[in-house]
Length: 224
Image: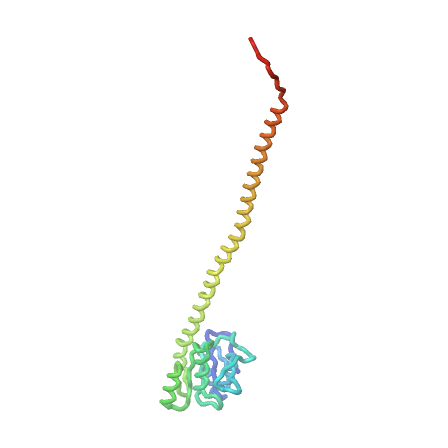
């Protein structure tokens, strides 16, 4: 497995031939791509975080060694490989909800029109005849750009959803803060009313007290 760290696109190259793996790796690196190479379709699925079920080969399960955090912009695979062929790998990738958007390119040393048609119908972006040339790889960049731009456009959408949800939380907090203020105002109004009522009562009591203390003179007349 070979890998370069500084590059724009990340390509997963799959081929059971060591010579062909080295050849495609070198060509992709010349095209400024980061390359990960594996020698079988099952290892490619494992690298993506998928694993073929031992009891039912048609069922994919999550691999215990998950590499889903690694972004893959394109998969290029040989068609003829023991065990899982490149066509089988193509089908597994396109059946996966998480990875079906990854472009897949098939390589083969045999020019069989029916094979080429079948791969393209299943979702392959390109079908290259070996030996693959540097000029062939120039066709890959538009496919890789498409997936990269799609992922980048998804990020702002998620951030926007997160920002939209924040005002709702702040509004709810504002309501929670305002409620005690209303209660405080009501409490102050009640205290004012009670105080006013108390003052009126006190004034009335003072008048009554004055009347009671004033001496009463009966049958007195004043003449000048």
